[in-house]
Image (cartoon, rainbow, N blue to C red; front, side):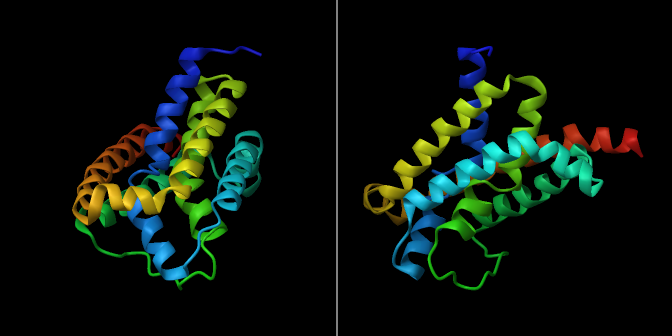
Length: 193
């Protein structure tokens, strides 16, 4: 067990940027307006379970299907890129059927524990100790839970305009993460090719 405060902080920050729950506030509010109620506890627990499970079985799962981490990361980067485009341009690319209750889909997956988070977790696993990544995941999920619980208050606090600005800023951050993810993994793909 190699506890490392620095690793925990770094992993937490990276996951925080990828999960981007603050940038997702408008999506959460949107969902809540559509569905009327968000099961914050359920969404948080499910996303934590998905992420921690993926940390342990992700790589073997991918190997089983015959996908390498690089391909998965490149696919993840596309998902993130389009999500970022939505945020920046204010368009809807993902036209999902309105969910009954917004807890597992689309909140826990793919909003919180989506392709981006999964890919990030696998990339972190290559560099950091598992225990530190688990702590980072748990810290993020606690924060996510807080945001889900107080999304109504946050909406009032920032107002429509404020949230739109936050969303665009985070969209650009997310796009940068997507491009970095793509760039760092496409080389691995090409070398394998």
